[in-house]
Image (cartoon, rainbow, N blue to C red; front, side, top):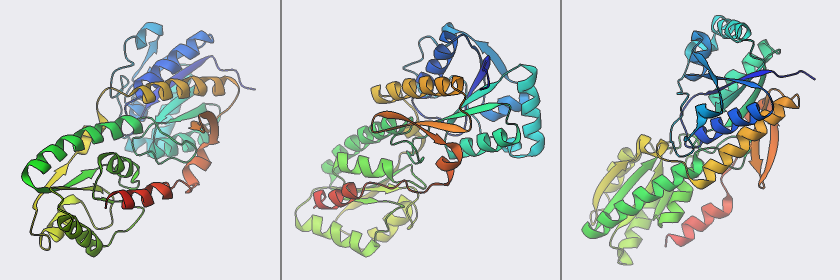
Length: 328
């Protein structure tokens, strides 16, 4: 079993609420176990540019409530090259770092796995941090709960103005490949329709449902569109619908990066803390090329390769059926 003496921690890809609680947990769990900790700024870019600094318990004070990530994040194209990885490896060796905890999504894990396969003497452990909630091996990913609650709060406010003006709002939320946010937010806010990348909805059916809402004397309607819907974004769909649905004043709202920000929810603070703690303990136990996740409220360790290649993550069928029934 390899002995870990010093570990690095980084956040990469899109930021997600809960990353800071995870960083805090990694740092303090490592120090409790007698390890040195190095913070790596701007993800893999910081590895290549040697943008790192020593961390102690005070380095992560008062960050539980902060959105974003104190380590910053970036998408790093040079890390995809052999030259970029070699530079990153040499910087880690120079600083005598034995292992790294990487917090991010599938792009982050792809880079981590390739790097670890190329340089197996550096142990790598992944923590799933993405608001899309679309990684195999964890029921929930860091940031998903907070982002969903942010969307719900915004939709509730839009519903007020929609009711006041008899309007139909198309609200686009993040989720290029996953409709997890759209589905839960739509159910929570009583949306009349939810358009998901996982399930194609015929525009004709959508129009008929909206006309049915008028027949039932609905004063407003909300349609949630995941950005990855096969018909295009909210603007494209709204243009098509507006030609057929004349009784509503049609408006479009793109929530965009609003969904990434904000103080993490209690759930994401606890999840980040649990996963950070588990990641450090897994490294100490000799694990590498793995991801720590949460399933059935228990920590689960999955290989990075399995997390990236398994495509069994699906939206709950009962939630999709329920959304249709409750929107009547």
